[in-house]
Amino acid sequence: MAGPPYVSHVKLFDNAHSAMLSAIELFNKPRIAYRNEITVILVVNAWELALKGLLRQNKIRIFKKKQRGRPYESLTLDQCLEIARNRKLWPAALDGAAVSVNIQGLQEFRNRATHLYNADGLGAVVYSYLQQTVLNFRDFLVIVSGKDIAESITWDLLPLGATTPSEAVQFMRVDPDSRAVPAINEFLAELRKGIESVEHAGGDTGRIYTYYDVNLHDKKQASAADLSVAVNQDASGKVVTRAYDPNKGHPLSATALLALVNSKRKIGRPLTNYDRDAAIWFDRLKEDRRYAWKHDTAPSHVYSHEAVSYLAKKDDAYFEEARAKYKARTR
Figure (spheres, rainbow, N blue to C red):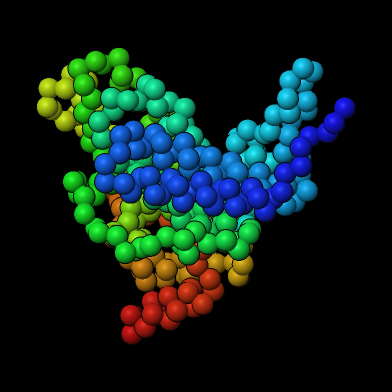
């Protein structure tokens, strides 16, 4: 009996590169129906090819055990992600858990597209995921194969559009068929679940979805709280808002914040309370609700898991500068 077909990791990387370029080209056409769905299908395919290339590059089998009377079947995207995580194959420069959440969010949209056809406004959420996945993919492919999609793209594009960029909280309306609402809410719940898993692990939520200006300068990282979407179930024109409890989004005391930052830092010395306080002052984290929050009657601020990710990525030189400026301010 013949064994599984030979697959070259070089060819897999080439095809992944082509699939992502096709997705970008299709999405940027001024007139195209089914834009989000087609783009997501190609993007998910690009990631599946790239991850299989990563496995083959590391001499890992990408075919399942053959079933009698059936042709060989390759691993699913989820299986590739699991192997990459368990074998620690993700490049060190990438937060593999966060990138996986981004990919799985797009895969979830692809799988549910049939039920989300009338979710007016949901495209803004998908667009934010797509923006970030292109950058994730570029970083990934450059590291593992040396191929850079930026070299194949003309960036001189007209910054024109029919709508303005979405805000952190995206409001939506659906048509009078309220049966669509549960499907939309289930999809958003899955996205929030993935973001929360990275937040609680102190991971890089900026690898999941991020808002950008036309120059691709990072404006803000997303959090699970940002993905609270209001749905008007009767399409009467009223916007239904969902209250956000900052106590749930910022569960960490200053002591817990420091402990988590130290546990997540991969290089450098252990940080002290003074390091933490200096950094919080230096970058004005208390003024940014993404990182810190204080109730009017509370004695001190509390912090989010995003604050953990933010500080854990800083090197010793940053904290030395923060300490020096913090000390000088009191003189």
